[in-house]
Length: 316
Image 1 (cartoon, rainbow, N blue to C red):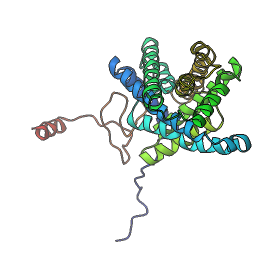
Image 2 (tube, rainbow, N blue to C red; image 1 turned 180 degrees about the horizontal axis):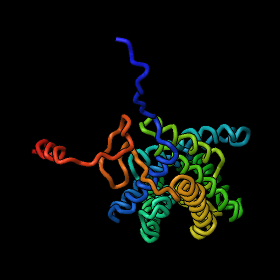
Image 3 (cartoon, helix red, strand yellow; image 1 turned 120 degrees about the vertical axis):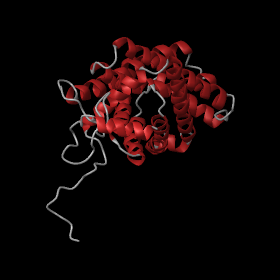
């Protein structure tokens, strides 16, 4: 039988639109802040731990003295190709980075789905959860495990941390923090726009690759890089210097990069002033399922008594 070419074809798009992606990010922000406090902290702990493993892998790759002197770009390329697995694992397991929360909860708060207090509470809980997870992996697994204790690993790890904390000015770390979380939150945004796992992985990988190869400062990643150098006896780095010269400027820069340049901008472009509900796979926020195909794909079907009786029968 010949195909009826004059009939409309049902099309399934392999990605959400930018507006739908922003809606998904807003819904995720609302969902995250309503989690129990203990679960938020645990989720943050796991995210910090996973990212610390990625940072440890990069620290091993960095130990190549000849390349560091003669071809540092090659080492940066290798590190940038390896590091994104950490963010992929975090996003696919649903763990919470504070830096991702800067985007998700900013969108949901601007969208009037969460309050400013809820947003700030989520930031604080995930930040300290990330710190606990990162320090656990840094100290117990990597530090006392002796992974970076050999002379070559130790000297390069200290040199890398010194270059991140001692060499740059305060404002430079702040500006690098903006770039870091702009790209990391762009990776989170692209992951929200993908419908299946392979596309999510690619969407996460390349913005994260760019952030690493450019040498930007991510406050959660630095929770491994700087403390491990202190653990190994870095002579020029103290806890106070780390907090003032690295943690604070990187944190503020990350808030601006993720919250403003991704969260606020995409909310303004796609959600602000839009009175109509945005459907995700036929479902509005807090609504019931709708038809996914056909001429009524974007129109809610009012429930009928027959449908309700049929549902009752199915449940029995």
